[in-house]
Amino acid sequence: MPQQILCIITPQEINLHKTIVHFKINELTFIPVDFSLIDRFIKDSQDFTFLKDYFKHIKLQENFKEAVFDEDDEPEAHLMKLIEDYRIDHFIIEDYYEWEYAPFESLFEKGYLRSFEYTFLYVKNGEIISTDSSLFDDENPQIKYANAQKYRKELGLDFDWLSQEKFYSYDCSKKEYLK
Image (cartoon, rainbow, N blue to C red; front, side, top):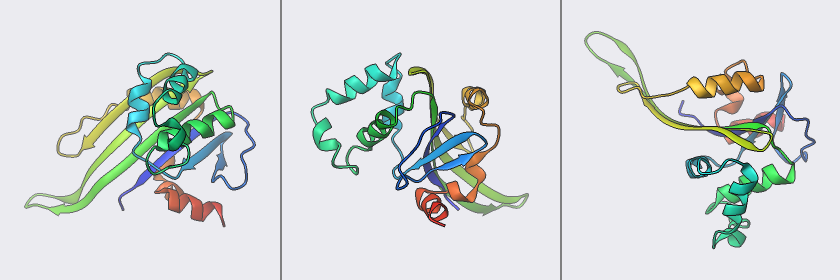
């Protein structure tokens, strides 16, 4: 099943409003977000050392005031607002979008071809430590998980959260949260 999920994962103790979908797993708070494919947010953050400077930059953008009210046009503004409102300064953002998961069969083998985009941001004490954006295709693997795995471990994330059904999409997360 193709998967599309963006999630903020933090070890911080935060009291999120009950309307915000979130899960507490192994001392970490997982906050699935209702939009994905914001690789621009992560790629643009590479030009900054501190998150607060990057957020100042975003707020100076011409369309920022409108963006806060139009999530479909500028999800970056909503992500920034969530992080600022709850003072989250130690976290990972993982954005995973699988656009093809197709069965194949040849004379020699059977299986599935998988293509996806993975974007990663690690922030510690407000400092942008690492960013990564990778594409993966079974026919041409180019994924670089080394940094992501290193910082996942540093955060205390020692399991594959993406393989859990509740994280297949925001809708799956919301359905599980509302149970």
